[in-house]
Length: 368
Ligand code: NAD
Ligand code: GLY
Image (cartoon, rainbow, N blue to C red):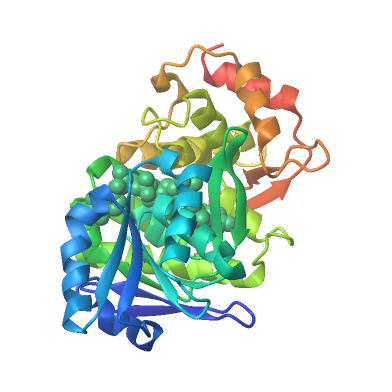
């Protein structure tokens, strides 16, 4: 097992990465579970795959699980499910000193974390991430949120978990498409500031996706270490360091919005294509060699992720696609904030990009 500290001032916590953590969840949580009843929020897919394993560990420790099993999917990150989950926690008299368990992917982690942030003005919670995306990104760093009709993740709180247990065994039941989508976030850490890790991904990405235990452990631990370092520097995304984690997200969100935040394009797939677009846009601006942008595209495509916007079959203009970017959370006093690259591992934030420039670029990428 690898343990990575997240050194948030005043609220440090550990991310433990390894095999068998869900089967041993009672011991792993130890004294954090101070009562005989343990509230766990999950979704129906994860409950079917891992509910019995988690329950057996807790039962052996004399604990009884209070399950809240939500529908799988992005639509669960809603006011409706948040309110019902908060009411459920209050009905079970959860106290501030208790720990609520979030067993699932980013949807469950984000919703449960937000519920924990607001119940009694803040209870503890433990992340048990079961998707690759949640293990390498969403379970670490304390961003919690729901979606509203105005957009994704527009209502939420920064609320750090007390502990994260990333069980690599959970990835065995994850659908291959979800696994690949999560892998996009792994590649992201290489592109941000670690060219050697990107090169490692080029060599080992296929093994990560095929289930090689050593490669998976290395990919998750390296990603979590990168995220922990960035979050410890800039917990509330005020200095610009944490904003780097949004590489590919501005283009990606525009594509997700255009495809209705549906199964047509998963979040990680949008990030994958978004990173390729950010690289090509950087090359077009003369910031990085075009060959380097195409090297990124080649790796993304080699693992079956989208690397060409034309494959999405959108009938949309570059202008309309770019207009989605005006709703980006990074827009500051009306100015777009973009993450561009000077090379692999050299991502930076800039505000000197105009909507007209992005529209023209996207029009070309869409085929004129
Ligand atoms: P998800 O939670 O919807 O899970 C994807 C699918 O996999 C679901 O159908 C789920 O039921 C299923 N699943 C999960 N684990 C499984 C397992 N082990 N076996 C079988 N099926 C399993 O999606 P996700 O990709 O994990 O998370 C996406 C969400 O994360 C988005 O809402 C995004 O906004 C959010 N996110 C948050 C942050 C953050 O910092 N808080 C970062 C990135 C993404
Ligand atoms: N996933 C982006 C962040 O945590 O800041």
